Length: 282
Picture 1 (spheres, rainbow, N blue to C red):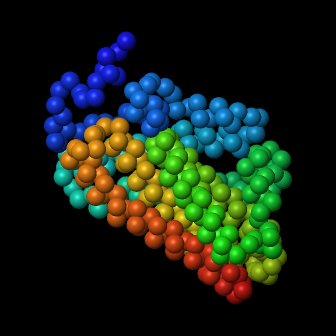
Picture 2: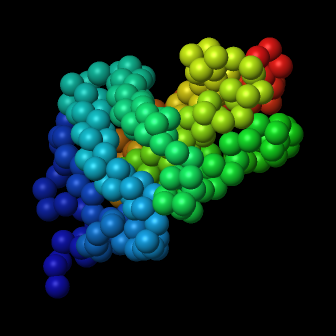
Picture 3: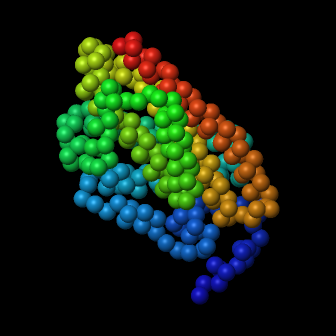
């Protein structure tokens, strides 16, 4: 039996400025218990012939190492280079948003040139669900429903990122941007053009101005809260609760948590008030 799993402290004392590269064992539970595993088992819950689900997990798996690099740089800049946590975390958020933008553009272009039936018939069940909800008439702008849905999504993102760290956060981001990319493309191709009586170029511009602000603030809120969850998850694994570094992590994530909730609130208000108002102008 490997005795290292039975000891609470490493054999050598940890230096205050020591940089420990990220090493993803599996999830928070397996890391905390010292168990080896493979995070890919989460995908076994969704083994099915649907290509859409498989595509989402393949994209997540491909992008997770890149997000891990961002987190490694974040930790190195804070603990080794002694840069401020606010500036460093802001750069990390921007880097992850750039990755999300690439995923969004890819799915948006694919959905724009594809037949809606392709998503409904060949990429089920996730994309079929999105196609059925791309009718503006069926959209519900009830504040209570919007608030509850966003809170559920926000807490789900927090939980996934806490348990599965980089992989969970990447999955949340991929799901979110894919959701909006397919929805926006289907809206522009379908009922949005008919109801707004705009030409196709103006329909694209109108749809972007109508929906993009809400999409952006939602994505930023999810990215920030995922970083908060990852920092807490890794901090609980690496450090004791009374260690100075763990206390520093708590101090760093408090303003980040408030920022995430602020961006989420703005996103909710945009969907309740801004989107319906824009739709009346088009």
